[in-house]
Length: 236
Ligand SMILES: Cc1cc2nc3c(=O)[nH]c(=O)nc-3n(C[C@H](O)[C@H](O)[C@H](O)COP(=O)(O)O)c2cc1C
Image 1: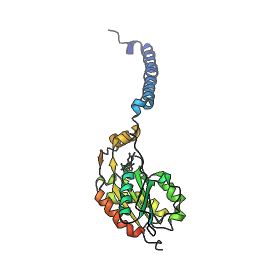
Image 2 (image 1 turned 180 degrees about the horizontal axis):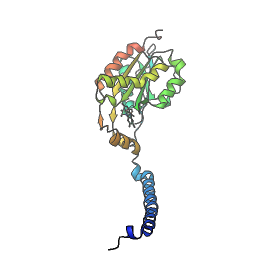
Image 3 (image 1 turned 120 degrees about the vertical axis):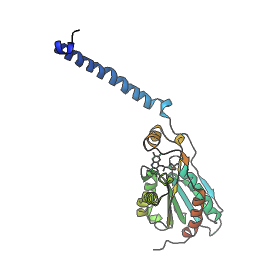
Image 4 (image 1 turned 60 degrees about the vertical axis):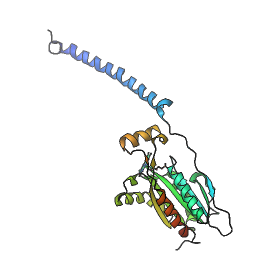
């Protein structure tokens, strides 16, 4: 049998070069087309499930009652539900409370105290919360402010992870010094993530689904927070 490679090296080399060219043309382009179709066809995009933001008012508008704003930043809704529980608890203690997404707050002029809560994404509080604190820092520095963060690092509630969770809200505390802070374990629901988020969370970071919110802890924090928020002026 003739060994083309050793007997006709030039033919062999030409053949291999042609093959490589074909491989490049016939494998590279279909791969790109496949990827484009996969990423941009709606059935593959797997967009996050729709959910309604929470906007509620609790408590009566009695004269002398503290008027508290609980504003939150969320992507998948679990922080909104925590903000809602905090709002309800503060109202049980006699305050008049508005709970709303931070992006919907028109003014903080009428509030005697503010609670700000953010989901954590990629090690940070959400940008709309950071912008809010920054844009209203002068007014916020005049009244009692509390922060809370909702994150999944606390699925293992170790002192080290607590430390990391509190580090997420440190930049906010540097803008406006709070009267109190809290970090809560959140919820992971893949149906509320976009395709890319699910890819990262499920297959790369490997955070399992689950609702780890401890409502007892959240309610206890809110109940203990009320006296700190109802001090008329911040202690210097
Ligand atoms: C894309 C993505 C990034 C996340 N990054 C972090 C993170 O850096 N640290 C953390 O503890 N949790 C992280 N989480 C978990 C969320 O903070 C947690 O699921 C929280 O409950 C989400 O709040 P939300 O439902 O209000 O959006 C991340 C979640 C997603 C989907």
